[in-house]
Length: 338
Ligand code: NAD
Ligand code: LMR
Image 1 (cartoon, rainbow, N blue to C red):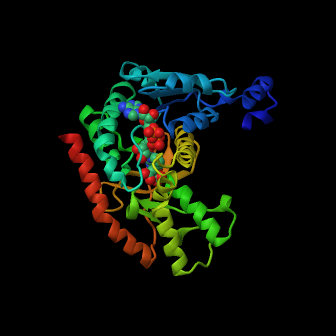
Image 2: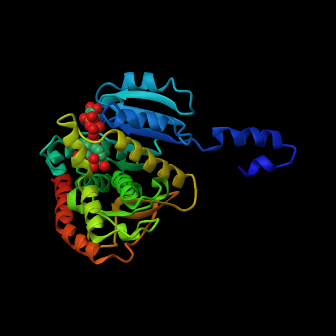
Image 3: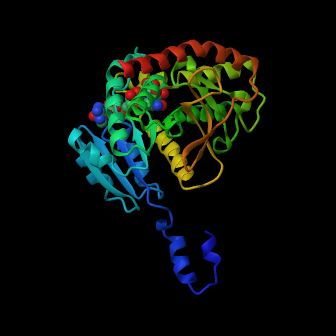
């Protein structure tokens, strides 16, 4: 930090501060669904994040155990577990960021939309509580179907008079994580160097990785790009089938969720040039919500970046995804207003 080179009389104090995580502002993060398959490893990863000063773990059951376990880790965040409706307010009060992995996961043969009937209601009630107890918090929506749960959240916040489109994010980071991994394998480039934007939504063909923008550049054939696109789109199903009835991605999702939450916290803290993909309110297409690169800042999504030039294959993909994404968005809006 800049303070460590200071030679002023207070340099000892500044030096001490610069080595202390307390030099980061206090940030409270709440995880809703914290005892679940994603929630537990996400709680672990957020406890390891030095930007978090307070970690609030909420679920309908099981959080006392998760909190007791995670709180023994010798990192900055103070951990508290909250259980059942009557403690939801305490879990949320003062939160800067709320991460929502609450709800049921897929089993083989199901689509994400098959989760709508159960998860729409869960998301609606959790978002009502957010509007009441921490209306200024950023919200990272993980619960599926993301293409519908984000519009539901927006409608709930609008009704409560608390909606700020800059503060609501559908978490599509796992699609980016997958696209990076698969691209690195095929292109034979170091995975840590890879960047690939993924746009559209978070289900099947609505997931559109833009491999024409991938870096480092590689000379992949059209067939390779097609196969990489398909594998990214079907990544969730690949895990659901391998888990054979025991749920969907949890560990890779916790990783992706923790990376995205970290980016949001950095933005809040004023770190410049934090850009990640997310499903947000958008005007870059004719749809009201769309995933694309987003610049994160002190108010949340400070800027929604456009798609840039697309290959013919990506243009086709964009055209084919629009009707399904539109239907899923409208389904969410209708549900929230009924
Ligand atoms: P899980 O069943 O293991 O855990 C879900 C947790 O939510 C459970 O502990 C449950 O008690 C809790 N819960 C249910 N109702 C709640 C409520 N009203 N308030 C608080 N908590 C509640 O499921 P999982 O594997 O952790 O998946 C959770 C969700 O995340 C699913 O909808 C899944 O489809 C979704 N998911 C999204 C992505 C993504 O990329 N966005 C990736 C993986 C999974
Ligand atoms: C994923 O992409 O892994 C999640 O959306 C979970 C799922 O149902 O595939």
